Length: 280
Image (cartoon, rainbow, N blue to C red; front, side, top):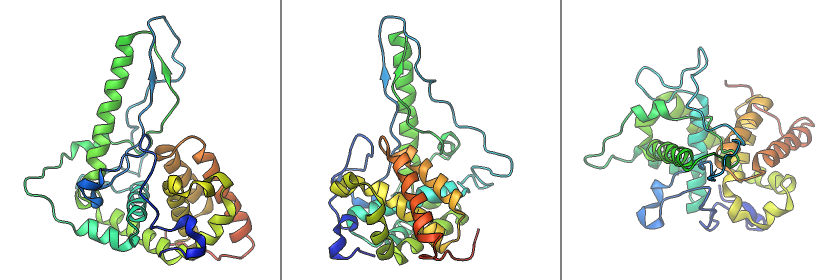
């Protein structure tokens, strides 16, 4: 799956240097297979003077829509959103290692649990796939600031537990199969999509490819979904933008939205890349 040497911008063997304040992979000494993505916490600006809250505090996880439960009867994640998040986490880790994404996925799923490891399934109910990073909050008192910071810490700890747990404890078979299918599509079309991505991303992303590994992985997954899995363009783009809102910095969601719309217009609509028959 490695990109050709002439297009080193997207080589999976890129250095592991990244933006630690936004992505918190485990220390290399802790083992590469344990790297996970943790959504960034909302920052809090406190003041002793009364201030108006500039944006609402983080909400609890929303109730799942009718017919689209977050977990199945076994208590594991069962939604396509969970599969996309898992595929992103695996592809990001594989790029940091310079490994094949499918082999990395299979290795992680097959990994044996450590002796004495216990996973709290209640953390899945508290996990919020739609928890996006917002701007700083202005609060009226130090007490309110401490309360918000404490909630951020609890949410981050819960997400860390879920994302670092053995996949078979977190995701049901449907999610595992879907995530693997996405990664197979990513691997099969990697070289082709590298060339396209190099044309549609902004210059400052090309200038800092190592700092944009996660964003590039999101593009690869969305493009593979549209061309290989036949996912409707609007669905694939919306899901990619949500992943960017959840895990990436600043203007990444807007840029990814624009890149994918350009891809659909210039490389799918004109027949350059033919989408496969829908499998969803």
